[in-house]
Amino acid sequence: MSITVRAPAKINLHLGVGAPREDGFHPLVTVYQAVGICDDVTASRSAGWTLGVTLPDWIDPDAVPVTGDNIVDRAAELLAAHHGVDQHAAVSIAKSIPVAGGMAGGSADAAAALVALDRLWELGTSDEELLRLAAELGSDVPFALLGGTALGTGRGELVEPVPDAATWWWVAVPSTQGLSTPAVYQRFDELAADAPEEPDDAQAVLLALATGDPQILAGALHNDLESAALDLRPDLGDLLELGERHGALRGLVSGSGPTCVFLAVDADHAREVAGALSESHDVVLVANGPVAGAHVVTYV
Ligand code: C5P
Image (cartoon, rainbow, N blue to C red):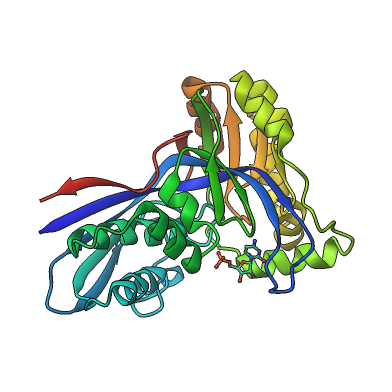
């Protein structure tokens, strides 16, 4: 038996960050949107545990955590231990989401692995339990299970769907060099020593989503980590400017970066902006959102 589960990348349409909590995590109010750049995780029966990764040529193989250190190893261990079963499977990850890019690629892999292994091992884990296990694996993993558009609170792990009837078009430009999420949060702390305990609310983005108007959403996009990411990687500021000069409604660092995303009016406009950015950047992706969270695509 072999099961393939697909899980999406995310963009934070709003990322409000507060002062660090006692456990070191930062309180967040965020609006996640799942976009159609996806990793596939395939799990097959096997006598032992193996994990392989296939990559497009633009992702540096050295940037991907190897077997034993990959979040998918931890997802499998956690699920197997939770049910008291042996961690036996041959798993392969087919990556398309930028690595260490601020689009939650590792979280997508973890979410896809939880769903694939739950089916392979016939565990029947409830959605509630899967979300709880996902939260143990990382702040963004529950959202990768849920997909769509959702409000995230706590450290990002508490997710609830929000209405989002439109289709939004994005251009994403990954960076050859990843950024470490903890390093970006640390720079945020240095730059925003007076950050409030309560992060900024997401009202403007939630209202903009309800209008279905990309011009209005463009004006509401907000990322409190952007100045920290730009401080660590000033070249991203030039990229944001370039995308906007090429007609994007708005450029934004995705989460902790360094991937930059650009909101377009519609599909044709996204392709136009992507074409212009391709003249100076090797990898330019076009995606729409919202799309589904981790879901089975093949079961043989
Ligand atoms: O939860 P996750 O493993 O994705 O977090 C990675 C790192 O990002 C944490 O160790 C922490 O340094 C930082 N982080 C944070 N506050 C959050 C989420 C992540 O400080 N809400």
